[in-house]
Image 1: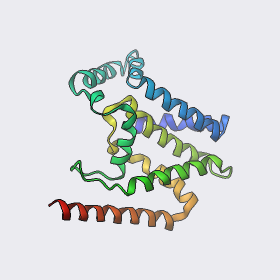
Image 2: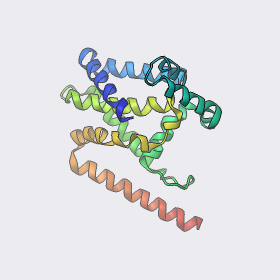
Image 3: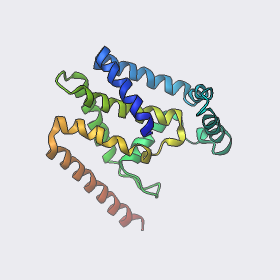
Image 4: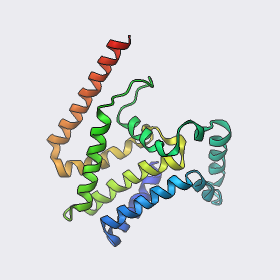
Length: 195
C-alpha cells in the first residue's frame, strides 16, 4: 500500500493544482463510485501488465476460489471495516471501542471540509490528506483482503499533519489521549462484565 500511495499522492497533487480542491474531491467521489461498482474487476485490467499480471491473476483466483472473501462482507462495508480496525483492533472480535468511531469519523469529515474550503492551506498537505483518504477508501474495495487497518497505519501521520495545522498540538494530543482513555474504559467494562 505504501507503494500505491506515492503515485496516488502525485496524481492528487497535480489534480488539485489543475482543478482545485472542490473538483478534485468530486473526482475522488467519482473514483469511489467506480471502485464500488467494478471492485475486483479492476484487477483484471492489471492482468495484462507483464510484471504484475501473474500476481493479479493469483489474487483473483485466491479471492474467488480459496478464501471466498467476496461472500463474507459486502464490498461497500470494507472501507468501514478498515477504518474501524485502524482506530482500534484486538484479536477478540466482539471487543470494540464504539464511542471512538463516530468521534474519529467526525474529525476526518471536519478536517476534509476545512481542507476543501480553506484557500490558505499548503497544497502538499491537502494532497497528502486526500491521497491518504482515497487510498484508504478505494483499496479495500478493489482488494477486499486488504480491509484490515494494519495495512493503512502509514497514512495516520498524513491525516494528523493536517489536524495539527488546523487545531494545534495540544488539541490533537488531547484528542488522542481522550481516545486512548475511552478505549481503556471500554476494555475495563468489557472484561468486568464478560469475564
